[in-house]
Image (tube, rainbow, N blue to C red; front, side, top):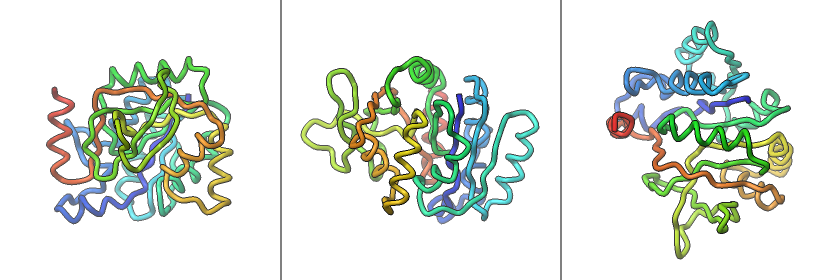
Length: 231
């Protein structure tokens, strides 16, 4: 299975709060975020790990080139306006088999990720999206499902009975990349709007619950992440 990491953001909030290294190189438990994901993906039989970074991160590029000696990493250097555009830049490398995509600052317990990947490998659906009922996001994307955990809608607002939000881990088949091409041609922006189009296009997406997934958006999140992973 192929894996992909979006690490093309500027990390401006962290920089404004005094973090002097690029977000991919922020250390949690002594390991840079990007290396943590690379090692986890390698332990889950990654045939390739495709990573996009922006052109303003020479330190990140050098670090990835060092990791390439031991891991099947493919690097794309490109400045993009959104995660959806970053995925599109990676898409030529992801065609041909199922793939798992995440952003560089997504943190989770590896045992839960193992269960998720096993489900993705064995599922007959068009994709499996990680979800969590832990909400600690400034602009969460709420997930609606039916009784079988098939995703029926992605919402910006919680609705009457909110339970899950997107965890930022996407397991998809190559069919999704064709829909991504359509979104790009139509000028659709933002990853959440791409996800909506997946449902509208009839793709069968299953929600896979994690107990907790957190992102590193602010300096204070680093300590939260340490506590979470040590717990």
